[in-house]
Length: 262
Image (cartoon, rainbow, N blue to C red; front, side):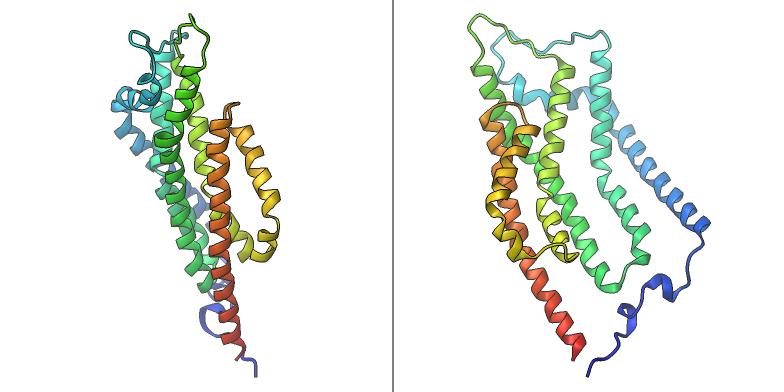
């Protein structure tokens, strides 16, 4: 005999507590957005005094490979000021990501079912960790190999004097590309949770996914096989990891459904 679900799972929490007026929703959203902006500003205020040192640290993978006597240059008169400033602002947003995501979570959590809350928060926390891991992988693994490749293939007699603004734009693009790429397991699990696909269906599409990973690697990285491969291979492995965890999630959902039907 099938029983009607009881407790928090029986109906949406917003239905239990009454619908919140639109104005209250907007006020709540404004409050959350202000807290996000405040978190970024606080992080920026802490980081900006060390902006030059931070830029030196970020540029170390390239500067360490330049020949003795060669250095980075600024082709724009404002670049020595704006390049570290831009890096400090991006680093502030990067540092404040946990606070930003927590505020988003706090805004949507009251409208979630209890079982959705149990899954949403771990996925949220894991997505933050994976994004950071992607950036760390880019800095410590990808940058030394990519810059080593670029500095070694130049024609003889050409002096390499990288521009600080161009370098910053390049590394920020790489940080973002690898940070997003490392979110693939989360995206895979969400697709399975929403019923958009199944682990078996994703596994059957593996050859297409591998090709897509290399195409994405080609579009998001410089035109060399090393950086393309260093992005494509982790993307494929993370896709496989997402399938593994997706199977576990699907199995748990099936077990929960069987318990409710008893």
